Length: 476
Image (cartoon, rainbow, N blue to C red; front, side, top):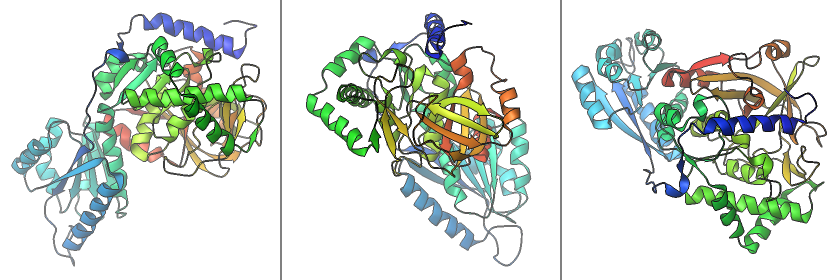
């Protein structure tokens, strides 16, 4: 490790290492990729297991229960817009086989148990074919609730919702749709990819998640930037200027450069029909304009964009986008154990952290904190009092995760990166002692970054992990 280098220079050594490692990875260039035609909706099977029984006795659901669930599921399908629910009913294994043939190989399943031991009687073909499955079990609908976690411990991708809250049906569908949406995902990468070794491998990403990674030639993007019309640059710049509470360091030229990059990045994603972006060379973009405004704009559109080529953080943002329609704030960590707080800070962040359809948070326009205040980046002021989930999907098989509460957001940041939030955690001293201890790397960026989302998604993470065969490590 260098003794007298700046943080930017030290992290730059990681970029050089990533560039060297990337020589062994096989990229397909975006310019050579074939156009894709994705279905507008992903398919999820809904299996009614058994039959309802009397309303006044027995270990079963009853017809009014079924009608209520049918109504809720119809509303969920309409609300989400990108799922097709394919219904079936089964009383035995043979009927289950017919249902699986109708929905297709690998389609995730929501199994709703209607009567005692119905599911255990008919589930065999689902487990044998290794379909991911959520079992929804109302109280007193039977004793089948005892078995899903046993199946999961036996190696099957199953989780259980044992609840009377019918709103949890939407939660279940949201989690199940993550699986097919990942398989339809196209990621654009300005090499090098950085992060844990598996997450940097296009082949492993395709094998384990189904997503496609395409590399972007810098020269081709420079041509796209040069082609952006001046009117489009001015319009984007004015949107940022009019929305800002204050403009502190950036000049008109700084804002215009960043606005040009923002327009070009959005057009790049549209051109290649991509759902995610990682830029491994962003710290060298100052002469052409930093991508930080563009990253914010993309995340607000529901298109995750990761700084510093961080593939782990990008995949994290994609997973949570598909599950909850929430953008994520990727950032660096720093602790104050005397206050039991953990900071997250970066020089970009989404304006819409509530959801992609939510309101924008206030922001300042600032110079980048690590290049002498040059360039133009957003300093977004997130909401004090919000419960958050701080997480990262690493090694393509593990979710590092914790929850916290935002207790402070600066009016104007000084040290660290521009957008900052300070959150109270369960045990800061424990967290700092064990930070990233599960990662077998010394790369600073890979150890440092986490992604913040509004809301407590801890239990959702465990459900997803069971569905995907992942591990969960709670930090702190």
